[in-house]
Image (cartoon, rainbow, N blue to C red; front, side, top):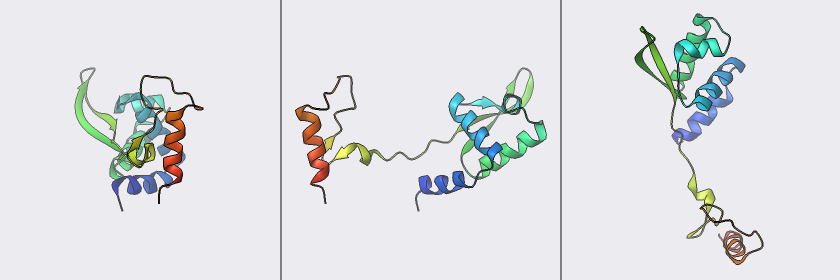
Length: 120
């Protein structure tokens, strides 16, 4: 089982408050623990328990830091394994990734879809 499958299983078992906490950490890209529980309108004790649970499940990272003159932790999301194979058709990368606008009726998109259809 891969790390992303483990994380997916751990995420499925989260409580409502844990899910809100994980979403907050991911949306902000990182937040100080002292702000974390305030943003979620939780007690510091409950906020700490949620952080501990998310850390144990390897969904967030916790790093010691000083913030506003106090020792605290900086919480950041754990990088998830990304499956780029979903963008591939054989050796062709999806035409929708890039700077150019792609015509869904165009030849590049049609070839990419046909490659998907003929994969084993």
